[in-house]
Length: 201
Image (tube, rainbow, N blue to C red; front, top):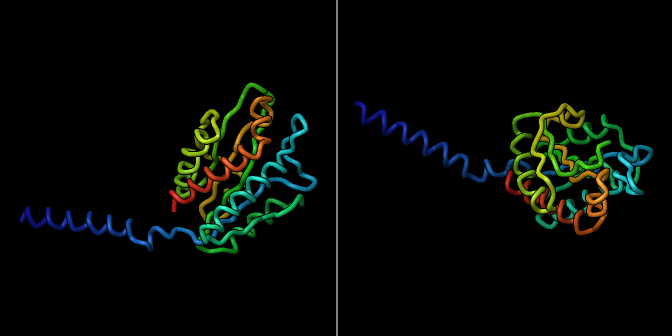
């Protein structure tokens, strides 16, 4: 009966593969919550005349445009330079089922030599999404790949859906700041995040 056990094992593996390849599995999300970090009285990092909250919103808008062109529903936690509390951002995300949450940021550090892109996550599904985005982000914008990291940011821990926080570059680094402030960099970062979402989906 050993052959029968082997046949059963092949059947189980085949069914598992079909489940992963099926549209029901691939449609992991129908809505993307796009969170442009900071805003209003919370300007985020501010270096060399460059305000993080403005960069975050620019990338978030570019990402929304790409997703809408694909026919994917989007929800923005803010559309202008207004303050939105962390709790409100989490509450917005938790209103939606079949969603993913992407918080867009730019980084800063006292050591102005540091540069690069990194993506944070909290749960297992967030780790998969973070990997998909980070794999594309750093090489596309041409910066150091600082990898993915698990961190208990409020917007990651509080959201029920898969969630990531993307740091697109360091505006404390003079060279990287100049690049981050360009439309090319912002649009390229948005495209990398979009492609990561599509790969995850």
